[in-house]
Length: 337
Image (cartoon, rainbow, N blue to C red; front, side, top):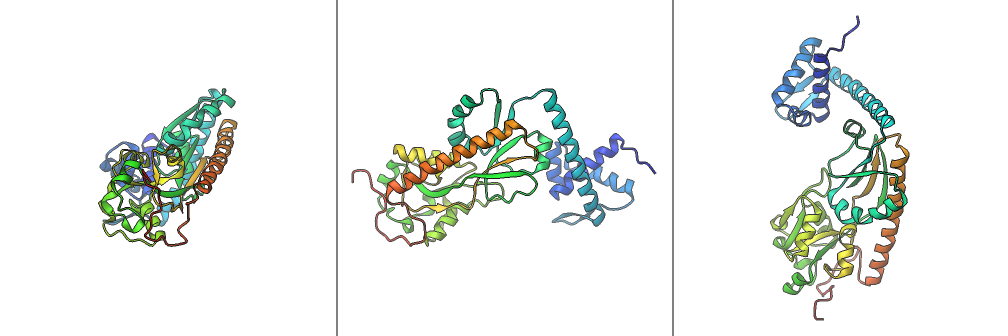
């Protein structure tokens, strides 16, 4: 028997696929810009039409049944194929600018100051940068027309092309004025929770205190009131607060090296921790030449910055990894010393 894919049936299938992907009617409603009740009703109509349940509904979880999981996989592949075909047809008709989704803090402090060199070498390539840090997969990139992205996270990408082009180091930073006003901060053990500035969303899925927690653990220090500091949803905002003398931020070298070299920020303890996250260039499979050119440029720029950063760490003469425990002696030259 042939089934006609009516507009109503297609709408039911879209609601079901979105809810199954998120395991939530609420999150599906947010993506589809409709109410939670509308999504639930559409799925219910699909279940009635099929004559079988597609979800096991509990107060805590929305889990596809065996038949629901089978349908979800088929729909995912089908919708991605449609989105990919439409994207290719649109590009053949009119090659617009490349859409680059980028972690906002990285875009503001590292990427945009370097983009002049890219345009000098690739004047024929348009580039539209969009700041965001939500997780990516191939389906979302195809659905939303995202040609490529830069993400700061631990990696673990599966269905997209992902290339790590720059690693990262973590180090506490503060303004010279803040350091002068807090001479008691002689080693990590002197830190207090109310002095800390947190990027509460370092990457999608990270905890609010992951970066500070990892650095303190490797430094062999416990801060009981770790949660008392100011919290921001962007590293750029935490760094801005540090520049304004409001506390100690966990710096990432890609975002703070220029300020450190200019003396606007101080490497507080000379204690650097390799981050579990890095910067990745991400694209859907089958990237066009313009996207490949952006990737090659980022790899080159990342290598150049990494060499510059490593030279600075070596020249500073005080940068250490947390393999050795810090003593309670000053690690940073204070203003006036």
